[in-house]
Image (cartoon, rainbow, N blue to C red; front, side, top):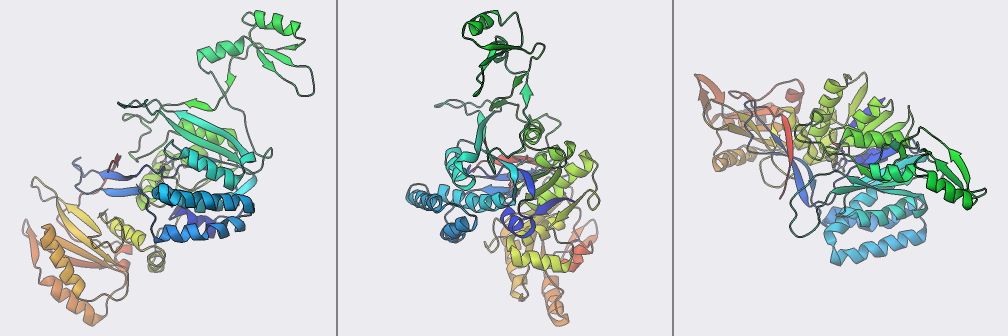
Length: 504
Ligand SMILES: C[S@@+](CC[C@H](N)C(=O)[O-])C[C@H]1O[C@@H](n2cnc3c(N)ncnc32)[C@H](O)[C@@H]1O
């Protein structure tokens, strides 16, 4: 069955994707752009909400996790069957980057871990396209050569997207790079693609195209007799065989692709930062897979690859670490645009539906548990990491004044919470100048503890709106949330997905 996963592609590939089961991988990971991509949500009236959801982060640091991954790299490489010399080279290369470009090293080690796993799930007949840009493409190419083998490199595709900015002291940056590798040379699927091509290229082509035959007489392919008169004369003198293919005007597609980026008024636009055009991905899928094949996008964002794969009758798997990408944007895209039904045409894995699932998510990834809990009750995530001392989210409501008001949200997934949590939240309400606060806990508290918590929360009083009292401090458990209970506020301003990159 077609699947969307919520989570880190590293863990999911290792735990859930069968080895050598995928025909085509397209990945469009963070590019080392050194910025955060935030999704700006608008309330019902179209006003932007003051906080933004961090869609995903593209900021890199050599933290403890990265250092651990770098240390493990030689073992991972030998497990993946990489040649010892290649593994040694990568090790020296990465160490050299430690002093000069530590952030780049953090990024590359993150990518290397994941690419090694991707190689494992690719069929021997499969191919992989890595989408990146010149910020790190040359470094990634070296790494891909090591992991997939230089002999399996097929193309460096330049996607010229024609977006003009106003660069003052260098040429306009106007392209991305796609690195294409096959798993095993000459065994891969490749369906030649054709294009009308630029007029100048086409005219050259139509003047006659010389083809060298390693074991035979060289040929001149003639597509237009009139235009090829001179070439035919010369070829006959050189002893070439003339092969006529009249009527054919399309030329084989080169490795420079001119396709427009999704414009601000395009119908395709979903508002997901970094959304790629369908035409780009359709071309990739058509070239490197056949109907019924499995297409896999480990960084699927708003599911462009999934839509393209589905339209072209391929099976598909998508993963994204941002819950709102999977639960909101991708799900809506599949259901509204393609008319697919969750549970019948595809399944979503990794989003908790039970208390057990929520506990599991908490154990695996505390920050994602917080995000899930906040988004589940229509809140907006505000903290970047778990335990960063800030509040975890906000729920916005509108009492008819000029400004939206908010309830701050605190999520506690652990078992050992005590009354000091309530006092801390009251402190945060005062500090933030907000009228309401909500606490989400994993399990129901013992009767005694619950009574103490309720007493302490009741001391904060009620917010009166048009004669209706709303408790200023409220608490929900995960089972409450799963049953559909929500915090009680005057009205809730829900998000709509208008997203933009937010340059830091
Ligand atoms: C450049 S965007 C992909 C955009 C996508 N091609 C589209 O057209 O919508 C990169 C995506 O990778 C996701 N991501 C980042 N790290 C990830 C990880 N470790 N595992 C899975 N997804 C990840 C981000 O949440 C983001 O949606």
